Length: 273
Image (tube, rainbow, N blue to C red; front, side, top):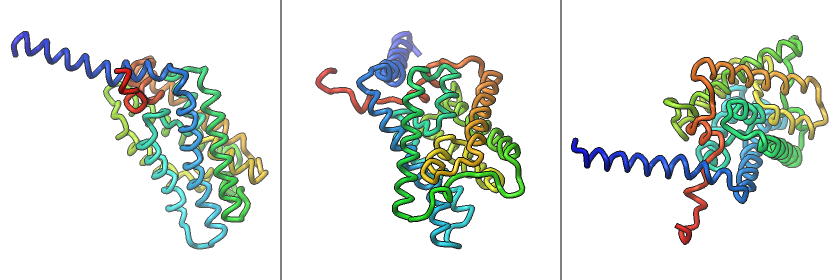
C-alpha cells in the first residue's frame, strides 16, 4: 500500500467517523430534536405494554387462547421491532431501568432521564387504558404480581436477576467491540423471550417498572408494586457494575451513540449541507 493509498483510507475512515459518530452525537445535543425522542419513548413503550399486558388481558377475556409461551414471546418480538424501527431516534430504552443504567454508565445525560421516564410511564398507561376500553377486562390481569405461594422477596430476587441479565445484554451490545447497532435488537429480544419462558411463573418477568406501572394504575391494584421498581433498578445497577468489570468506564462514543439515538441522517436539512 502506498502512502497515498494509506492517506486516502484514513480520510475515508475519518469521514465515516464524522458522519456516523461525531455528527449524530452533536445532533443529540440539539434541543430541537428532544420532542422526537420523547415521542419515540412514549410510543415505543405504548407498543411494548400493548402486547405485554394485552396477553394477560386477552387470555382473561378469551380463556385457553393465549399460552404462556405466546404471552412472554410477544413482548420480546415487539421490543425487537421497536429497536429496529425507532432505536436510532431515542435509543429505544422503553424502560426506566435502562435509562438509568445508560446514565450511570455516562452514556446518557442525567438531565434527560426524567423526561424519558415520564414518557415511558405515560406510554404504558395509555396502552393499559386502551386495552381496558377495548378488551373490557380489568387491566390488573395484564400486570405482574408474585405468584401464589411465593413471597414478595422471592419475586424481588427474580426481577433483580432477570433485569441484571437484560441490562447486561443491552449495555454489552452497545459498547466497544460488541457494538453491533440495530442487530443488537435480536440479542435483546431473544433475552427477553428466554427470561420470560423460565422466570415468568414466579414474578411475571416484568424487568421494567413502566411495564407494570401502567396496568397497576389503570387496574388500581398496587399489590407488591415495589417489587417491580426495586428489583429492576437493583438489577440495572448490578449490570452497570458488571459492565465496569468487563469493559471499564463508559462514556465512549459507541455506547453513547447507542444510548442516545441518532437522528442526524433523517433530520438534516439538505439545503443546509
